[in-house]
Every structure is written in C-alpha cells, then in structure tokens.
Image (tube, rainbow over all chains, first blue to last red; front, side, top):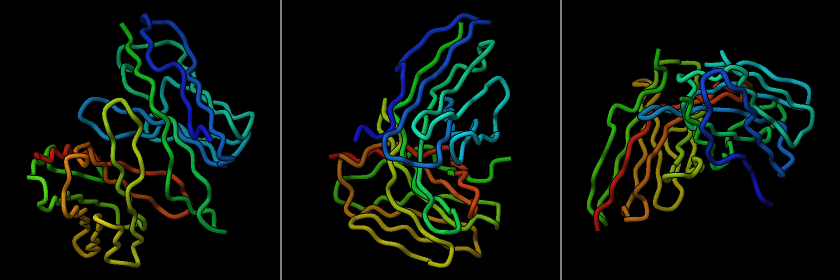
Length: 117
Length: 112
C-alpha cells in the first residue's frame, strides 16, 4: 500500500492564481482531511469528509473548496491564491474506530509546500 | 482560542535520559488524546493515544499520562534516543466528530 499520497510536493503561485492539491489514499478509509501547518504552529483543519459525496468545514475553510467523488480521492482547490495561504498542506485519512463511528488514528501524507507570491 | 496548548516550543535531553513533553487542553468535551511525531519534510506519524477513561497508556519506550482534573497530558520517552529527535504534536478529539485539534508542537532534540 502506498498509504496517503499528495501531489505536488512543492508549488509557487502568483496572487490570484488557482490550483488543486491532489490527495489519494489506498487504504479504503472513509474519512479524509485537509490540514494546513503554518511555521511554529500546529495543524489546523481546513475541510474533512466522512465519505464519498459528503464534506464539511473545519477550523479554517475560507479560500478553499473540496470535493469527494470517490473514496480514494480528496482534492483541495484554491481559487484565488493569497499570500496568507502560504503554508504546508497535509492530507490525512482514517477509518472509523468502532461501530459508533468514532475515529482516532489519522494517517498523513508527506505534505505539499505552497508559496504564494 | 487555542484549545490544545504545548507551552514548550523546544526540549533538549541527553541520550538515555527521560524526555517529558507536556500538553494542556481547555475543552472538557475532549475524550481521546493522541501524540504524533513529525520529521522534517514528512507528514506526522501516529505515536500513541489514550482514552479519557484511562490515566496511563504504555507502548514500549513511550508512555502517555492523562490528568483529567488538571486537563493535562504528558508523553514520557524512556530511554531517549537520537532518532527520537523530531517535532511532537499533541492532539485531542471529541468522539464521533473525527476532527483532531492539534497543539503547536514541541521540538525534541536528543543529544548523543
């Protein structure tokens, strides 16, 4: 299993440009997440999905959009890039821990380092 | 409002000694706590977790302690090894939400 994969690894964008960060997992996990990590800070949840066709906002969703058409893929879209979106982006996935749907361990991809100039 | 706090940005210990990383939280609804380890240019990897119904969980050299009354948890690494040098994140979860709230991280350096 490749686990969670992310592309690209690095990207430089100009203000106002758009791009899609790709995320895929081959573990058949229902839950997928997007986080961003700013320097010296913890990870903040942008969006998450509990299954194909279902997405919801996290702590910092403004400026981003997501879709989940398959179990495997969870792309993150930046429509009008701003310098404040310069960050490292991590995708993660997890499987419900128990029958109640409780999840704990999330598996992370290697990250995408995005710079907006 | 930072619901999960790691007040020590860095920690340096000698190889073979104990490393103690601390984490405080404010939300009494959190019922599951995790520690993640992160090397540069990699994603975080799960290390150890603890449910709020327990006060201790061990896995080899790693032990997590939970003090619910103080809303405090700690990660003990004994003995510390140079390969443990990394950033350690504390995270908390509320059942059935699937959403983790992370602390800011503590950079651990283990000196040979």
